[in-house]
Image (cartoon, rainbow, N blue to C red):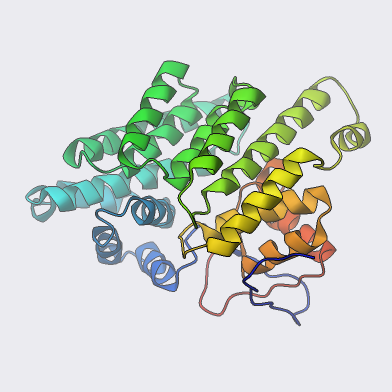
Length: 345
């Protein structure tokens, strides 16, 4: 029996599944701010970022969401960065440059779906463009981990050498040792799909889980490592010419000691959890892992706790994220509906 202390609200009764992307956040205030930004209201974004100074988790989370909201038209933020009222205030300038960097980064990520050489060159150019304002933001606010976390993603996308990736990781964790986004990127950076090794990737994720503050969702990064490993194996087998059926049979389910470890980590987190901006992401990571392991009760508990929101990771490793998550929820008898406070892509 699944022995978590908390019982998440169950949503049901709707025909079909209407999952809402968590890309613009799961907090109603942040989502409203992102909607305002998408309509040209940049003041809302500035206010939301100003509120996060000194809170690395909230700052990185809001910078990501607001960056996605402005990804289609970052020119307005670039204009703000040049305005006299911003350049005269170092803190405000740091906020704007951080936001601009994340908006350019979000635009690069959107372009990365293309496989043509021209698309790859465009993505690399966009990533390189994002690097400038992020580095400038880091210089203006030397205590802020959020620009360094963004630079980690830039380096991963550009295929930077190991020394550069290690340097950015060290700069980020020196400022925020348990920053969820930074640990997510570090695990992905060490994946075999990016020239790393499974051993180091799992060791890094395991260390993050072991040293996480009590009540933090950070142990969920170990589930991300399992997803990265399965994706790497899937690519390897496919590259060897194995059929889709053979690949599915070879990979099978998660099982044994790794699943027991994830189970204990997830249960410990749920028993001591404090509200965190990355809770929904952690629920999807654990929910994916337990569904893959065939552990129905914990998988259902975590995916129900996501409250109708869907995260790209880890579902997008294996197909369309929304479709993959919806299929898993259907397997578990869940039928989430659109959260009443949300709107999004």
